[in-house]
Amino acid sequence: PWAIVAGLVGLKNVRSTWARRMLRFQAASFVCLLTIEAARAAAGNTATGRVEVRLDTRPPSLEVTVTVGGRSYGVGGAVVITNQTEAQFEVLADEGGLLEVVDRTILTITAGRMVRTFPLEEGINRFAFVMRDDAGNEAGPFVLMMERDTMPPKLEVMFPVNGMVTREPFVSVGGMTENGTLLSVKGIRVRVSSDGSFVTIVPLRVGLNRILVEVMDAANNTSSIPIDVVLE
Image (spheres, rainbow, N blue to C red):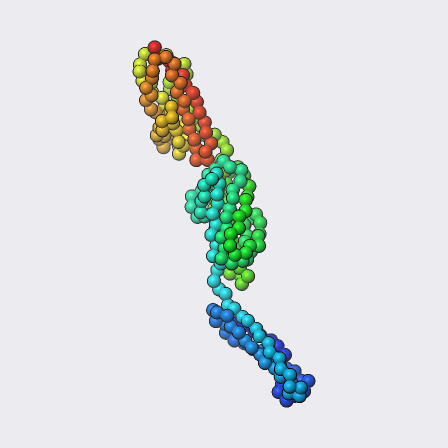
């Protein structure tokens, strides 16, 4: 909050004699202007110097969003799970400065919008953004966690057996998959229990019935198993 201004100021009525004057003042939160006037009495010439001092203690405003797989997410939320190879980050800043993506890169940015794409590794990816303006004020870290998962979810159909022949107009379809997945049987959504088990009843028509069991995880990876049942 203090500024030191040094300059050479001519002493009144003394030719070719100069002195060094140190001026110390408290800067407010707005721009302070200090004008120094010096004169040489003999020649009558004057000189004016102007110093502008601005106290800036306000951290920069920074907004970070990520777009992956066509969906956008903000920082500070749940872990973003995807099977994509890269993620696009959009940064909105109200002033210029240095933007550090911790352990990745340091960028010089200006006020406005900046877009940058980063590759994703299999597993957990941590992105932490810290911005420092020209006055040294800091904003962040703004942290976003992403998990790249390219493994298809596990799926096991325990019953009926493939190729089963029955005279019953309905058949029970059940098995195991991963908790938190979306599962459908013949295109109809089926609830998955917390232990990963599922079961549902499927109506049959006379002849061959193909029952397709499909599952999709949070990263949009899929697995499917077709089961054939014959109704006599």
